[in-house]
Amino acid sequence: MNPPARNEPAFFIIGAQKAGTTWLWNMLDQHPETSLPSPKELHYFGSAELYNRGDDWYFNHFKGLDPNKLTGEASTTYFYDRVPYWYNPSSQIEFNESLPTIPELISGKFPEARFIVVLRDPVRRAVSAYLHWMKKGSTSPLLGLRKVATEMPKMRILEFGLYAGYLNAWLKHIPSDRFRILIFEDQIRKNWDLTLTDIYSYLGLDPDFRPAQPGKRVHKSWGWTRIVFSYYTGGFSRSAIGSKTGRLLDRFDVLARHAINKEDIEFLRSVYLPEKDELEKITGCSLDCWDYGEGILRK
Picture 1 (spheres, rainbow, N blue to C red):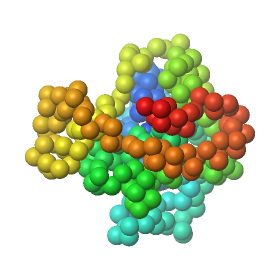
Picture 2 (cartoon, rainbow, N blue to C red):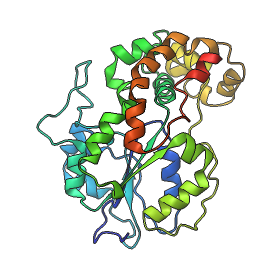
Picture 3 (cartoon, helix red, strand yellow):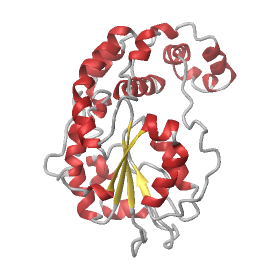
């Protein structure tokens, strides 16, 4: 896979959110044959506001990169279909209906680009996304996952796990030889070494390169006690909870049992399980590695 004539992305990691894309990006960033922009997520095609800034704004992120090396980007807002407004005052998601879909926008501009999407058990992905928003202090942790997911759709906690429709939307515009689907549990958590060899080869990179610390966890999660403490003590605690105080709260996570309840998991299962058969047909993979939250229910 040869780099394009100018500094522009030759590959995209398009999602899914909370499914290991940062880990994969770090493994690609270490490869001596890549030159990648910072930040990882530009979100140009996944935000109506950013898209309105124009191509010059977008390509400016690739200036100064080595033109003889492969470059790309990784924005988890790209996996979906319509281009949303991020800053609209409505509590609902609004889209710029005048724009083509995200797959059409990107494939039209970069007709030879390759794409990678990582899928994770959608129930566990939704739980992870919920905890992410709670860690950010976006809303009260007392509301519960189901209420937040259904009444605050702009967080897209449910939507981002409805993989089948989005895969179909992408595969209408991208041939399968340029669209690689990874299953997080099988291909990253269990077989990261074989997966890296495959992805490096897929992108035309030396498949024998081995990055440093491939098994290291990228995002450190907070315990529920730290999340609750952070929210209800406000800005005062944000620095303290990231240090010894936060680690102490995680060690004695006395509120952990209140983070996710069984009704939340049953609700998520009712949303995502009906898609399993269709997803297996689309991906050509067995998804028996996904327990759809059964392990959480047994705790």
